[in-house]
Amino acid sequence: CERKGRAAAGDGLPPVLKIGVYMPMTGDTATFGTSSMGGIRLATEQRNAAGGIRGSRIELILEDDRGQPEEAKTVVTRLVTRDNVIAVLGEVGSARSIVAAAVCQQKRVPMLTPSSTNEKVTRKGDFIFRVCFIDPFQGEAAAKFAVQDLKLRRAAIITDVKNDYSVGLTKSFRESFTRLGGTVVIEKNYQAGDASFNAQLTGIREAGADFVYAPGYYGDVGQIIKQARELGIRVPFIGGDGWDSPDLWRGGKEALDGCFITNHYSVDNPDPRVQAFIAAYRQRYGDTPDALAALAYDGAQVLYAAIERANSTDGEKIRDALAATRDFPGVTGTISLDANRNAVKPAVILELRDGSYHYRTTIHPSSDQ
Ligand code: PHE
Image 1: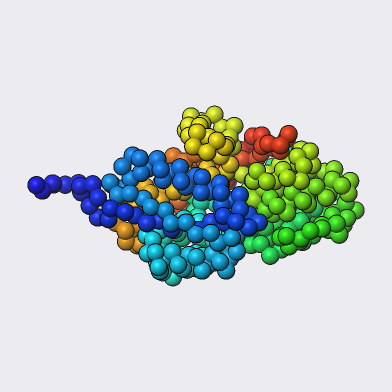
Image 2 (image 1 turned 30 degrees about the horizontal axis):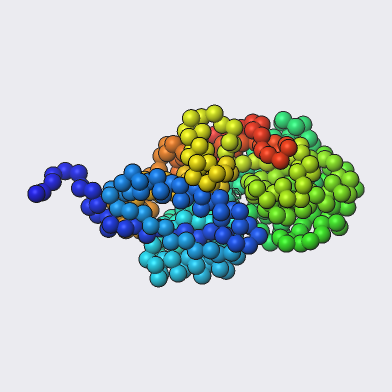
């Protein structure tokens, strides 16, 4: 019998929808991949249990890029050419997302990164989206917090100089901090994986800063702060989302007491939607979700909602539906994508104390952003 009006379940969509995922499941940033997959799997299981997308089942195809940009390019090429995925979720680290975005854009397959914040990612083209804020805002949020809340005026900066994310955050922090009346007294560089930060930290100690801005990833930052304390540097360190990892505390938790980060979400948020997510995640994995798990959970849902509205596996139709995302109720805030395919959302400031993160305040984007 024929149905009129609305399409019947499955119309326009095949029974199985293949979604490609690339993440750093091994390597120096492996906890980024593990947390993100926790969020993506939970969102996907919940959606499939509730009938999938118009009756079609979502199937994830996961590739490990080991946290290497070149490998990200290889595995994403494989996902779009061999596996014929209809859309791609990933990565976390901006350097990897930038490289893979070029592939997706060229093949006209929509890519959504839950958590890459560097400006260049979505500039790769109109098939590339994200559900997080961008680093010009994240760097400004850190500068505002340092100047206005902590009343600190003299900053040292230590940058992971081969990491697009770290370099971008340093730039935006430096600009905002200076504009707000602060002074950058010294800047030092390192490269991910360095064993000793002694030379840089000795210079920083002599420069007499009120705090150190350290926009790197958790593995190096944990070591940097541990070594700084050994050298007698007592001032707080302030960082970005890249610190967020259960492995940050490996170098000892006392070293991190009194430090702060900008981040996307706080487990202290009493919003029932956030608490329901935390409860479901704990039940599924026995673990508390970090910002990456929360962003990935939101990112997967935003993509599935777009595929549902597109009612098609066609890349351009999914792209158009993603671009039309407005007021999606995420656990990391309300997600509306702007003309540059970025989400405009507030940042939270978390204080590190006793081996965990404590909500301190929220910084909202200024209306001209
Ligand atoms: N924003 C970081 C980047 O672009 C990735 C990240 C997001 C890491 C959230 C931790 C938490 O490289």
